[in-house]
Length: 188
View 1 (cartoon, rainbow, N blue to C red):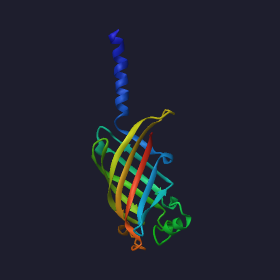
View 2: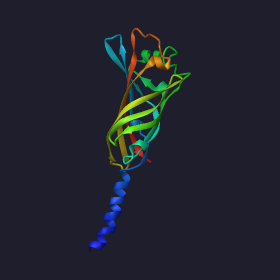
View 3: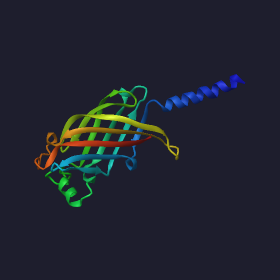
View 4: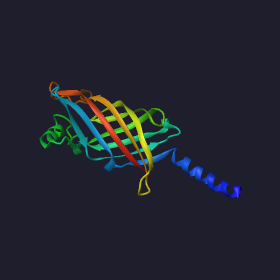
C-alpha cells in the first residue's frame, strides 16, 4: 500500500515544484497597466496610461537573479483622459511619437529575492537609452479559472524627462516622471 502511494506523491511533488521555479511568460495586455505621473504647475499630478504594449518575461523563483523581462510600449497609445493634451504629448514638443513610435525596456539584471528587489535595465525613450532601476514586488502567481498559470508584479521608478531629451515647458511641467507598472503574464 505505501509503495503504491510513493510514486504518485513523488510525481506530484515534482510537478508542483517545477511550476514554482523557472518559467517564461507572455505579458497579458488586458491585465497590465503602465502609467506615469508628472507634476502639473505645482498643483497636482497628471496621470497618463499607455493602452498598448507587449512583452515577455522569465521568472525564476529559485534563482531570481536569472529572471528577465522585455517590454515594448506603443508610444502613440498614451491616454491622459484629455484628447487635446494627448495630442500635445504625442507631438514633437514632447514624445514625438511619429519619429519615436516605441518605448522599450530590456532588463539587464536583478538583485533581490523571489518576492521583491531591484530590476535594472535599459529604457529607450525618445531616441535615448538610459539605465534605470525598477523597484519590483511580486503580487502573486497561480492557476486562473481557465487553466492558465499566471504571475503578477508591480514596479516603480522615477526618471527625469530632460535626460531623454524631452525638455519643453520645464517651468510648468515637472521634470521628474513617476513610472508605475502593473504586469501580469500568462505562462507559455
